[in-house]
Length: 250
Image (cartoon, rainbow, N blue to C red):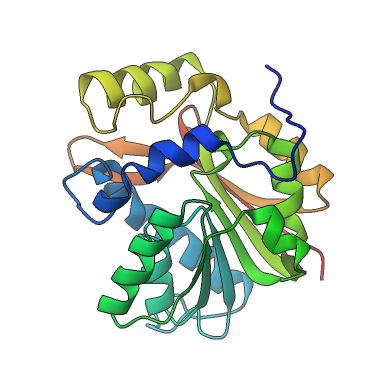
């Protein structure tokens, strides 16, 4: 499938419009974002533990991410940015949807959290020359128009010695059955049309894009839903959801 567009960024306008329509429900744990709220604890713990180990911190400290500057690309309403800020990180959240950023700013203010939210693309921020200890692209790469360009842009904003985290969906028959048919049509965990299976990214495709950007993969894990425990958990199974961490040489 041809993904490249002649434009200055990798933003998919249709995807932005789709998530903008849901902006008022970002913080409804029982609404359209319910699945993301359930997924949040496992991805937050993965980021915290990996970052703490990388930067020689104690992951059990309430301020385990203090003095780390973190970028959350595609931050939406701030579901991930807020707990990161509570762990002491200086968080910048960007999203091309102005309505998502408005919701994120309002909720952070109500929560008395100082988070720097900006309505902009990753490419625009990279062009400004900003860099971060940790860059997050969580559930984003399956929504962009050009995987290689997006990863290159995200990697450029990682400081030497810093880390890039990516969470996405593998393009397999199993992911079509579970993430599209199951999650959107049968269980209705997600609004129909949330994902396009052909834009899912295989671990090999992601690995190539990351290595071509000059980073080195240091960890990867699958994430599965435990029906009996009613929670997401880390797994060796990367057939559907998975996360990757990569570092830039110091």
